[in-house]
Length: 355
Image (cartoon, rainbow, N blue to C red; front, side, top):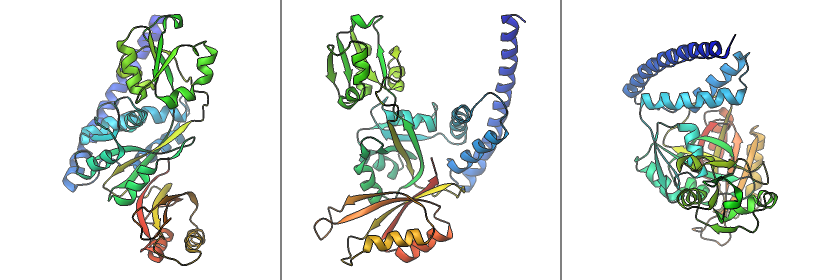
């Protein structure tokens, strides 16, 4: 069989895929009408996770789990936009890693609003100018994002989904040769994360110019000759900047956890995580935190994270509250019991499918 025959076979399969995708979208439109009549939520992470898990259990082909997830996340995003066009606010600028995280969940068809700070993301969703917001909550190298935690503690919005994304840097340039490069743009922290690459490719003596974001670096490198950028893949794509090298970071274990915020409650999926804010700053009772942790443990809740945050508005000095994650859903009996016991101390921040 010659190459042309292989191509014809691929064309035939693609024709079938396109027909079936359009068939799927017709059903999606009917679901969208039904949801609109009921006023129900379009984005259901627990249902999407259920579909991917079912497909993985049936899979006997060459596609691995990551490939199936990547393909279907885009299908889900297109489907949601047929049901109801989505507007998503994210911590900018355009081409930031948060933008990349948002697109990985909401696809290319959604409308994206770039916000200058995390507070603006919350405000935009609270005012219903966007249905969803995407913000970073922690990085495994640099720790927690305090502003996100503080705003969750004050806001009525809930965490409806989480995703953990590896942070990969690319080296992008218009130059055909490294010898042509006179300046490299990037964010200061990104330079620090790519020192081995710069050394290995004899770029240590090239002038490094720190800028506000890796997206800005890509924009500058795309418009100036003899320059390069250390930036995200999406930033290079947005500014049509050719990528010379990918994954140039010193450590392959640099990951950021992002949360998606909105104004609705998820249904239970059977594989959920719940986040709470516990404020015990008003009590002088010794062992108040220990008592809370004993309640969590005694109710069989597997705590996966605890992070302290200062209460700047508290009456006493050095008062703290605690951001806590544990496995389970708000509707589970043991979680309900915890809220019953500690209702005056706990604010529920959301229950969502474990990322």
